[in-house]
Length: 279
Length: 144
Image (cartoon, rainbow over all chains, first blue to last red; front, side):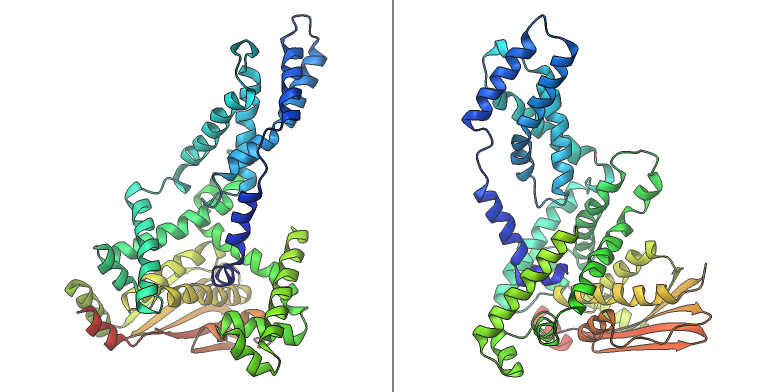
């Protein structure tokens, strides 16, 4: 389904939109609530019970801030939920360390802690993310060269053409492509072994798990595709596997292009929502 | 540049690669990686290589489903200019006949220029051929 997405271009746009639409993390309300809660925590006579409740509420109250921070690290290959999770650890630390006497906004204090925790996650995630810097840079060069060459050539470039554009050998390009696959793949399984260290076996075959994750996606899409009406199925096939344009499909099926467009977006929407509700 | 042409020529002269690995999904990526790097040397485009990866995954998924316990996958590659043929075979005592209606098979046949299944008692194999979407000779000329 990955290739469908990259060709259809649906998913990345959604992510960007979400980002744009994201509310500012700290509203006036939340800010006041923070102040009240921290004032409670600051009371010398506070009971253990009260302390715990206030602390929990503070954490819950500021979760949107974590989500906001985590969103900045989207599209880097780590699942958003994982980022929220490590970011929340940062938030808890910030709640525990925050000193109301310093006179700064809690969000001002907490943001660097949360982002620090997320960055640490990327760094400590070990070999999954620690692709050598040389390869990381190569990956970016490959991405931009690919985009440029696709424009000038009017088709997808070969690794050799990319090698010439970037100024390195084909071997290095192959290596670079692999590393970018490893980047995306490894992070997919990163969620599985976050808690228990005993799963080093899983760690060791992490690269392969990426493939398995694909299988899973494919398996979930499979029944959905099969349950589509024959015409919708055919349109999807023509569009994404035969790479036909909507007008070509329209001619083939014998309906208008507008109709194909409508059917296509409706079908994709259906698939997307049923996938999401399943997950 | 001349170096990579030389690599391609060497490959053309000796055009077979064989890989044997455990019939275990964990090794699928090894096969995908090898396939991708062979295709890169045959002047497949990035899109072709992506298609190839998907096709290999499908083929492996089909073959693994039929493999006996603890056997190997034998993968043979034949390389021609702008064309890569891959056969993934395994030991399968009683293979089920291929389901040509399955989604996996649909994907496989749309991505490849040729795909076939061999299912006889004792052996299950999927062969697929992909061609580069550009003319290798023309690309050679452009490259030089």
